[in-house]
Image (cartoon, rainbow, N blue to C red; front, side, top):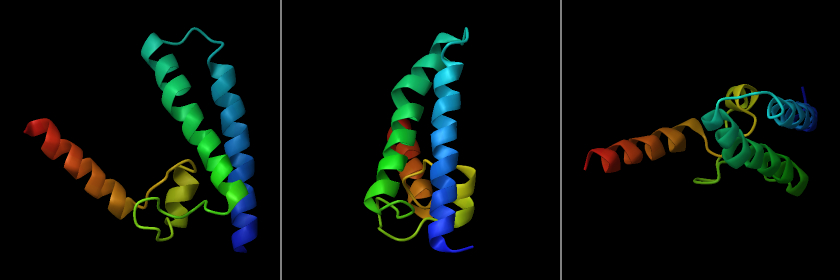
Length: 98
C-alpha cells in the first residue's frame, strides 16, 4: 500500500469516527464520557484531519519522526510516536508522585 493510500484510508476512518462519536453524544452517556468526547476526543480527531490536509499527519509532534503505521491504525488521532508518548507519560507519573 502506498503512503498516499494509507493516509487516504486513515482520513476516511477519521471522518467516520468523528461522525460516530458525535452521534454517540445524542445517547444518554455518563457525564464524564460526554465531557471527554466533547473536550478531548472530537478536537483530537478534527486536528488529525487538519494534519492530513496540511501534510503533517503521521509525524510525531514532539520529535518530528514518523509515527509507526501500526500505531496510526490503532489510534489514528495520535500526535506522538510511542517513544515520545511513553516519555510524556513517565514525566506525568513523576510529577504526580512528587
